[in-house]
Image (cartoon, rainbow, N blue to C red; front, side, top):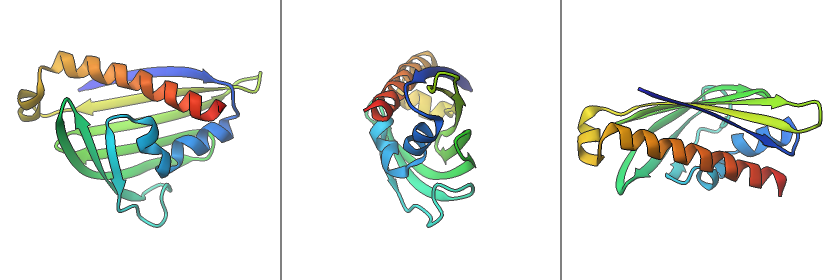
Amino acid sequence: MAIIRKSVKINASAGKVFKVVTDPGNWTRYVTSLMAVTHLSKDAPGTGSTFRWEYKMMGVRFSGKGEVTENVRNRRFGLMLKGKATITEGYDFIPNEDGTTTLQINIEHDLPSALLNRMMDNALIRKLNNIESGHVLKKIKVMCEA
């Protein structure tokens, strides 16, 4: 299992950052490898809401079912994506005294060995996911500061 923790300071309120991150219509906009989010339950993005997802890494597509595991307005948001791989994402929205927000992401992914053998070695996957998480934060920052 790999764990990625990163953060970025965004020149926007925690409320605005939370709104951008939790809007299912934005998920494919800021997560480059997330190809599609479909079949959203009516209460999305509320805790317990579900959806289907499709992800592509290094030309390999995989898909599964997702669930919002936590939604605490302007404070915390969590997702669990299950399929051939399991990915858990946590977003913390930390307001700063100067009116900015620190967005911290925690991502855990567990790729089964059969999937790893099809794609590449585990070290490369970890590096690619680390790079992508940096891109996710940059995109969210741009979306919130625009």
